Image (cartoon, rainbow, N blue to C red; front, side, top):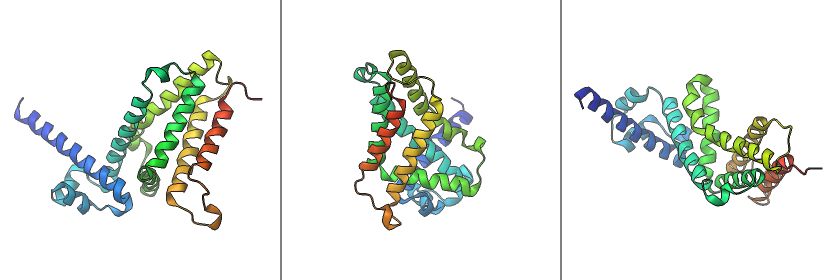
Length: 217
């Protein structure tokens, strides 16, 4: 390996380490509370070097967001690679997917708060969609898993035909995310108090499943 290739490898490893450190800080303290100097101090480097690696805090947040979603996606994929899952009907697979995501959101409020803050940061900074292609790619497999289950459900008769299944995925993902973010933020108005952290997510899941089920009347 020549010197140039070695230097590039060292640089990539350093950047990967900085992204992981940044992701951990964003999850623990929130994007809004983490400064470039905080990341630099946690990484043991000068803040000037951090700017040289990434340019802006927003750029680091995008890289960290991609890494965080890759971690989630791995858990998701590992959960649904079992033989028992593969033997399920398409409808039952989607039921398992919804259940997994809602449980994950309940157990990982720091992840939910990160998603909320990330979206607000991207809107505030007016980041163009093309700059988020890597971030989007890190969550794309979730959609593919859902659509594969829809196709399976059409074949085994467990999923209702004639639907726009991609729209169903997007609607369910956005609804789950929005509800999870609302719960993670906590009540603002008196009417916002949640009687149970599980009741509203469970009701939302049942509504979505009822829409997809083939024997709906």
